[in-house]
Amino acid sequence: MNIQALSAQLLVGLINGSFYALLSLGLAVIFGMLNVINFAHGALYMMGAFCAYFLLNLFGIGYWPALIIAPIVVGLFGILMERSLLQWLTGLDHLYGLLLTFGVALILQGLFQNYFGSSGLPYAIPAELQGGVNLGFMFLPIYRGWVVIFSLVVCLLTWYLIERTQLGSYLRAATENPTLVRAFGINVPRMITLTFGFGVGLAALAGVLSAPINQVRPLMGADLIIVVFAVVVIGGMGSIMGSVITGFALGVIEGLTKYFYPEASNTVVFVFMVLVLLLKPTGLTGRAT
Amino acid sequence: MLEARQHSGASASPLLEVAGLEAWYGESHILHGIDFQVREGEVVTLLGRNGAGKTTTLKSIMGIIGKRRGSVKFEGQEIIRAPSDRIARLGVAFCPEERGIFASLDVRENLMLPPEVRPGGLSLDQIFDLFPNLKERLSSSQGTKLSGGEQQMLAIARILRTGARFLMLDEPTEGLAPVIIQQIGRTIARLKSEGFTILLVEQNFRFASTVADRFYIVEHGKVIDGFANADLGANMDKLHTYLGV
Image 1 (cartoon, rainbow over the protein chains, first blue to last red):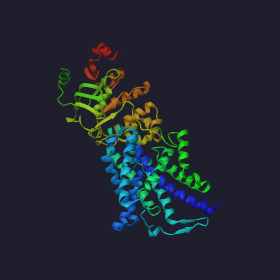
Image 2: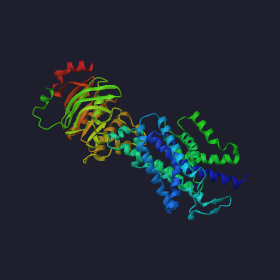
Image 3: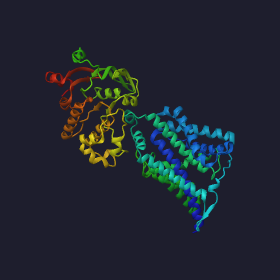
Image 4: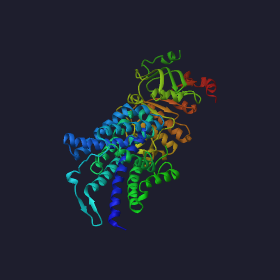
């Protein structure tokens, strides 16, 4: 047992898990409120990364402001998407949302590929987070440690916002019975729009976090989104905690599989997904919809 | 003719005026022209058989039914085209038949959910005064863990917090034990004495007769008759025919 190799894979697993968690969190929130399976989520993650790239290379705006600006910019784009396209799908079968967002994803990815090709653009690790720490059993790059911790904090803050605040109670109630919540005088359509924007913002945030590690490529989201969907299915569509825990857990499991049985590392998540669907179709923590 | 008799002596215009209200559920034409009025401070009950259109009437007034035509005036303002959140903010509160307690919210969150739409809503102390058992259940982790009677209390309590003075209650006594029904009756009487206006839908007309000032009979999506509580005795035969009891 090579502790260093194992730890390295676990770290990679935790980092992937951070992205899985952040992205599936946004997807779960969007699915809960809008009943839309947002296939464009990967493309929006990609746009977050590109936004960070443009901010740096066109405006000289660095990583730290990008962490705030990119989610807002892409979040606004998400709001535009909801207002112009998604709102017409209210009440329709999930399939329509899936197809529409899939189409949007293809268009977005196609556009970016057209202008930037398929190869990656570089984005440097910010100076404050460069270098690493020698932990004895492994060498921990600081930026990677930052990604895991920051993602955890964001996930926990989001969970707290939704499950423990009054604003969150409006969201949970509107997810359950939007008609009645509106009949109490709450502007539910506006809440739905803002929630979608928030979910998209989370995806974009993951994109910014990802830019220094993975290269900024038009298809970076497409590769990731399939696994993220598996995570959401396993954790339970619409379950906040479920997505976060499952995201991190599956990232770690993937990392472990890469160490012990690398051939299976690409498929282990999907094997899990099939098992869960067979044994507990609503996901590990999800509620039946 | 009906309205003229009821208006004799009353100078104030009605709080709620429904005229020619029609409503559809998809293709189904449920309301074929509902006409009635509710004056401020009254308790008015819509009676009728299952499927007559009573609940649809309340939902249409609340703006929940998508396709509706006709006229609904609240405090003189036409609201037939208004979205439900706007109608709620005008001071109309709705307690649905299924109560609508949220499973993903605890009892306190359920109670605090509807926002204040008018100043002067009941304080928490006043609410616990009306519904003492709610205070005990406040720490409950899930709204739907409450019993049917407690959920009904919660559903009424939460709209009393909003400051709305016009309440629409859809079958508040349905499926509840006689003791709870009495408590609800006392609550409605108390609210009436404090100046609330209440539009009630009830199948249990014996209960309704203990609280209502006036009744309207709804059949096949139309109001076919109406009379005051004082005239109830004289109209019992008619009532038996209409309600099939």
